[in-house]
Amino acid sequence: MTGALRVVARCQVADDVLAVTLADPHGDRLPPWTPGAHLDLLLPTGLVRQYSLCGDRWDGHHYRIAVLRVIDGRGGSAWIHDHLREGDVLPFGGPRNHFPMAPSTRYLFVAGGIGITPLLPMIDQAVRSERPWRLLYGGRRRTSMAFLDRLEALGGQVEVAAQDEVGVPDVAAWLGAPDPGATVYGCGPAGLLDATAAACAQWRPQALRTERFVAEVQDRAEDHPFTVVLRRSGTRLRIDPGTSVLDGLRDAGVAVLTSCRQGTCGTCEVAVLDGLPDHRDSVLDAVDREAGDSMMVCVSRARTDSLTLDL
Image (tube, rainbow, N blue to C red; front, side, top):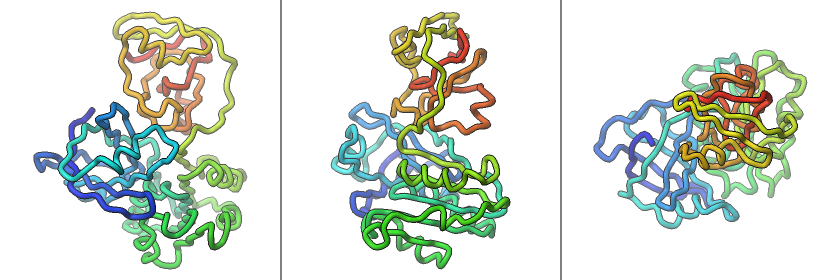
């Protein structure tokens, strides 16, 4: 964990969405962050949860997150909604950014529900840099869509698609023909992002960047036993099929911070010094996968007989 944050404000910003403003307990400046970044919050229940930063990145004294109550979740969001109060102090890690905003001539943003949160600072950045942009923002109904008033105030480049009014948004029609100068950023439910990926299939490589709530189905090698070598200690671990690298590390007493255990949050990212990872996460992009110098040990395995990790 990086340090601690005090809750200085909380407010309801949509049905089941709570915005929380955090500050250093002593009033010091907070670590800087960039659009797409998130925090790891360590809750008193022992859960570690990731939340995208959605406030003003130029405010050096406050972070802002928005938390959707997940009815069938593991209890992290419910605890925040039901128990977190102003004045409470929570350990935190980060900010970290697995969803960075790259320079582009134009930006197209596709958001579904709480997926709007990492895109808000990106939109602010596009506005500040005077880059053309458009947003397609979908949700079940307007009252469930956080920060809707703030976005609609930005004008005609925002298209709101509440399902109880217009049904499921037609992402392909909204995106139109491939635009060589545009980069598409998407965050939201799997169905929305799958539709966005299908619509961008003929666009240039790397034109689409997404952040997912659940792991994307990946092409993967067949499971086989392999050896994990821990460079710092020299320890060698055998990882059998059915056992994750993370569980193998924990069985050996090696602590690695983790949260989702689905390859979606990036918390358990570990540097790879030798060997070829079999990436099964939804965090790393094609360039990162090709580089092969890090992996999410909760889900990813090895394509080679051994992996050497920076542990």
